[in-house]
Length: 340
Ligand code: TXA
Ligand code: MG
Image: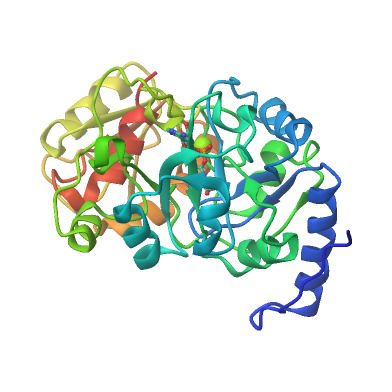
């Protein structure tokens, strides 16, 4: 069947619509397409086609037991891919979709084993980006996009089409350019084991917003061993090539000076505008100030880490973010980026 764009999205240009039609044809033929979402760029393939799914694992160099998120074009499609959906999952989907929230639900037989790493659950989300939604619409209600972030396993997620081009350009069949991602960090992943909502990965939706909609507490991620494999829950992930360390403001400059004395080039990344004990900046110690608001910080983080990697510093020393729930996602990504 020829995929068609039945309801053209008013915000898309004719050229974008043509690209989306071409992208849908590639997906239906078993190819891979990188596409923008509001969080990060995804590397998509037809969820029902195991050979297309294997291409994703191969391109990402991702271990086969790390499940993929399935992107759907409407809330009602949840029924088509999942079963025994708890009331709280519906509530969250209705409130936050399209948006940066992934719900882990019991899968049904339409989802092949290779998408879930053999687990009986599947992660589903409806992304809030006009290009992603138009692509899903072009694919129709009986298809969905299995899509992890469009980067090599363990590395920084892409937040622009150029990032995808640089990292995976020659290996994907098409890259749809939808500009810079508005959220910049991956979706919040929530599970409902024993009807207890629990965040597996903090992300684009804040804990307080989830609790407000559910009118009850949401558990935070466990530290340590998890039974379910969430690659975002590996200690080392989302990592730049340059070693990154996190220090409280009071120790930051002292550490920078000590490293610079060993002839190393250091970038100090602050957010608080504290100039406490800051030495003179020099060839060997530079400073970059990130936004002091966690949403703006998260939006820039990955693009900045890529930029800092290119500048070939020996160390990135990051000022510890505030110990406040609004900073959970940024703190989580920095901690994983620092784990090497
Ligand atoms: O914002 C996002 O979520 C982006 C965009 C492209 O949608 N996607 C993304 O995908 O971050 P990925 O594959 O890089 O990370 C998805 C995470 C992985 O850590 C994976 O293990 C976890 O979701 N996941 C997927 N299905 C799961 C399941 N059934 N149970 C537990 N974790 C699951
Ligand atoms: Mg990823």
